[in-house]
Image 1: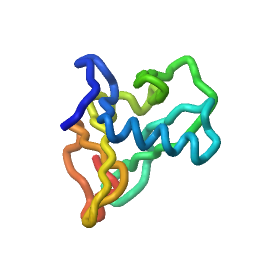
Image 2: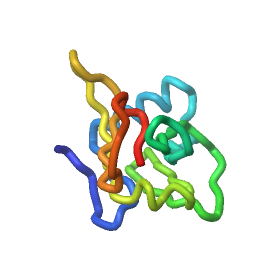
Image 3: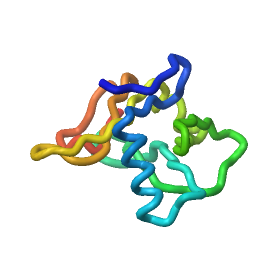
Length: 115
């Protein structure tokens, strides 16, 4: 796996995830924004991920820099996300972002929520 990592990072992003985030920022005219990544209550297992481009940072945010791409995790989500790897895959069977999270104890059948 092509990771750009430091062991103390909150979120590890693969080269392919960083590349796709750069492309999306350009496509969505979001050059001055960052990826906000967090968890929210919901889904069949209790929590679900949320990711979107944002421009406003808060005091309790944790920021990871990957060159031109920043990933920000809010303070309430950080314990659920710490150590997770964000990847992007493109292929016949699977296309999109995926999160490999060591903090997950179980996931639902659809793969969209966890606890």
